[in-house]
Length: 507
Image 1 (cartoon, rainbow, N blue to C red):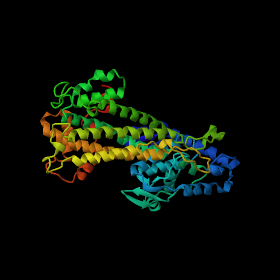
Image 2: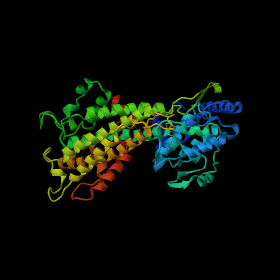
Image 3: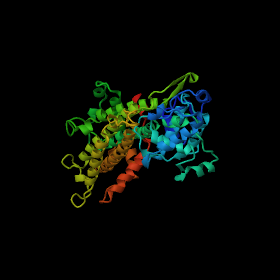
Image 4: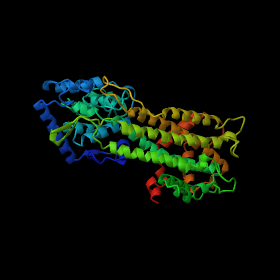
C-alpha cells in the first residue's frame, strides 16, 4: 500500500503502483488541504472575483469574463476543445502513471478541485481503469494540455479506457464498476490539464526501464569481456578513484565483482597490453550514463511531487497567482539528457558487437559463424545494431531547444518536453535491441572459449539467457532471436542474480 500525500512520492513507489498494482490510498491530512483549497475557489465564484481560469477564459481569452452561471460549461468546453491528441496511444503503463501523478499533484492543495476529483483518480488506479491517451499533440507548456484532456474525458465518462486487457468505451466500464461520471465544476478542468504529468509519466516509465537496462548493459559487457579475453587491469579501483566520479567507481566495482573468478579474462601483457576503448573504457562511458540517469532521477522525483497547474491558490484564496509552473523545461532538459545517456549505452555496445564478429579484431570464428562462408552467422545482426544506433542519433537531437509560439503569441515559448520523453522511450527500445544483439553474440563467443571457464555470476546469466536464445548451430531467422532476447531483458530483473546498485555503491 502506498499513501499519497502530494509531497513524498518516490520512483520506487511509482514502480510498485505502475507495475505491481500496489494499492493507493490518500492521506487524510492532504485531503484536508484539498477541501480548504476548494472552499477558496467556491468563495471566488460566489464573490464574482476576476481570477484566471475560474471566472475568465483561457490562454489568449484570459481577458474574457465568464458569468458565474456558465463556469461549469466553461470547464466542459475546455476539455472538449483541448482533447485533440493524435497518433498511437501512450503505453498503458504511462496512462497509469499519469493518473497517479495527477492525483498526487492535486493533493498538494493548491489547485482548488473538489475531493471527489482526487478520489476518482485514485479509484481509476485501484480498479485499473486507464484512459486511452494519444501520444502526440503536446507542446509541453501550458502543461500537457491535449494528453491530460483525454485523461479528463475518462473521468467524465467520455472517450476510451484500457480495462481488463481490452479497449472499451468509458461509460459502460464506469457503469460496470458503479462509478458515476464527474461533472466538472469551476477550475477543475483547468486543474486537471494544466500540468506536466504526460511528459513526467512518460519519463518515469522510461527512467525505470532505463535504470534496469543500464544494469543489464554492465552484465552483458562483462560477458563480452570474457568472450574477447578482456584485460581486467583497466577496472582496478585505484584508476577510477583518482578520477573522482562515484558512478564510474561503482560501475568498475560491479564489473570486477561479476568477473572476479573468471578464467577467461586476462591481465596486461598476457595476450595484449591494452584493449580497445569499448572494453577498456566501460566504467568511464557507462559511468557517465549513470551520472546523467542520476540527474534524471532527481528531477523526476521533484516533478512527481510538484504543483504544476495554473493558477495556484494560497492563503485560503486571498492570494491566487497566475504563473508558469506548467512549463516543462526542467523535465524537457532531463528527457534530452536521458536520451543521450541511453543512446551512448547502445553506441558502445555496437562497437563491442563489431569486436565480437570481426575476424580482423579477434581470434573467434568469423562473424561467429558455425561454418564461415557457407553460413553468415552474426554478420547482419551487427548491421541491425548499427542501424538502430544510427536511428538513436537522430532521436537524440534535443527537443528542448525548439519552441513554437501558440495561443496568438500569448504562450510564446514552450518546452517540447513531451516530445523529448517520447523520443527517450523510443531510444530505450532501440538500445535494448542493440544490447540483445551483443548478448546473442557474446553467448556464442563464450561458448567457443568454454563456458566452464566463465565467472560464477556471468555463468548464471549465461544459463538464463541460453534458455531464451539457443546456440547458433545453423543460420536461422535471427530477427526472432533479437526480439525474444529484447523481450526477456525487458522483464528480467538483474538483482535476481546480483547485488543492487546501492549495495554495490555502498560496498
